[in-house]
Image 1: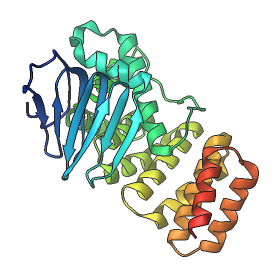
Image 2: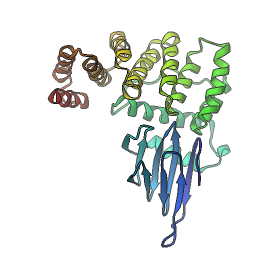
Image 3: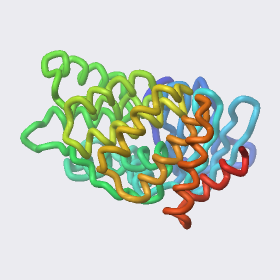
Length: 295
């Protein structure tokens, strides 16, 4: 099977000896013997989630095995990240295996909210979601549900086009900008996602605007290597006080990384020491110790 866009899920009966099924994308080949799994394209990369059995992912001359309850993300630059298959990922797998008309509106909304929350945790690097998103879809606004459904189905180009048309008429619609930013992030379009998150910052309520600051800064750091542009966003995020402890510590570590990257190593060192003092048992403090050791 060739997958050129979007996502697919398959429940594959066990093959006989020597038989195999392959899903081929531009970035990788996914080989299975018998399993339930999903493949989702993310720009030039992909994500594979496995519900049962195991699959083999071959990319850039390397082979990775992904077992039941696991997911593997491959970026366009060849970076590999392994994660546990979350409850949201399992829900997404089952959603893709079902006919679209079997999914209720409530399930659709819960699936996208959960999936975006998992994406957010993967980008920001925190373990639990401490802040509920301020932006929610109203049932009296069916277009937002349709756009979310397109994103859930991995039809990012269609969602992007529809949201862009809408925003040409309603430039200050923070909810639509947030959907567009999340859509572009999931599609692996880092620069375009950052631009959309900047629009969220301008027009959204404080909690949503601050989430957008941190997500935009994370993309600038991790995907685009633009540390100088990330610094003011991280400083503004910390100054607005909408975060809780775990995210505050993670943002401070991110800020220290960018400060060091632009030559402000003494300031970065002091910030990491503060994280260790104030958040000593957290993953962020462990990362701060690792960075200090490396310096």
